[in-house]
Length: 99
Image (cartoon, rainbow, N blue to C red; front, side, top):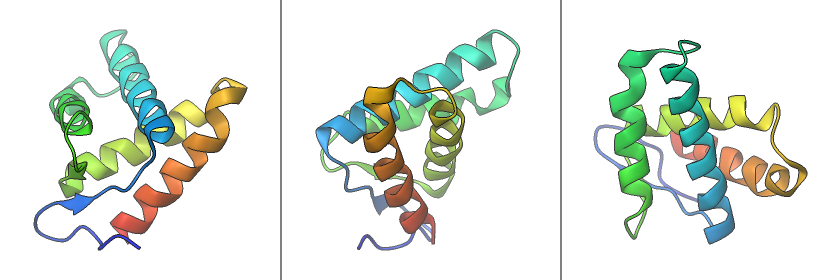
């Protein structure tokens, strides 16, 4: 089980498939924000989370982990069937990291 996010960063232990769904969720959130459906001030956190997702190991700050959780929740509401199981797994992992 990953250590909860406190003051610094926490490891998000996701599979490659789950990481792709996190990536898709964050991109959808950024698109929604650009279209005026979201919080444009949150874009920096989401962009930072995307950049961290490309690194190994994947470690997020508390704000980035919260952005991932929010993006996944929104994305899973209308995700394609192939993304639902890995998306739910990534959401569970993210929630366990946030504590």
